[in-house]
Length: 209
Image (cartoon, rainbow, N blue to C red; front, side, top):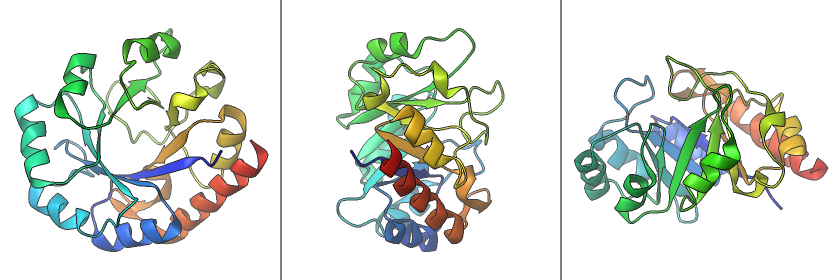
């Protein structure tokens, strides 16, 4: 199976074109104002015009009011939603879009329990826990904490970069991987060489899985 790739935190059309050309399956737009990678509605609507068919635009939210999510959906044609806060399952399922639930891998957390709780999710995204940051930590967690039986539902995130993504795929065998900081020149600005190297790392990992 080919590992799917989402590249998140895009803020510039030139980066979207580079990411698409490199072969990414999904592009993440951040609708969480405290993030340095956040985009406003006008910016997001302009960016999605550069996303072609068969590449999914994913909107990332953190404990947003439902009205805010609906407002974004009215103006930005998102194909999927990603929730990074403490949103309950009923909330996540209320917007008539496929959805991804991000789970921060705190000490003692059992990802299988979270996966059962969010059984309606299209995928479960496992990310590194940080008490101050919601994603984008640049640090990996212990991949051995992921049960092999859960891997087909998992999008792996947290500290992935061109130099470790092949190992991550070979060890975890996830459905997909998600990267932001690992392919950046600056926050919200993608390094096109790193993007290409990351995609090559994904292909190398697929050969070993």
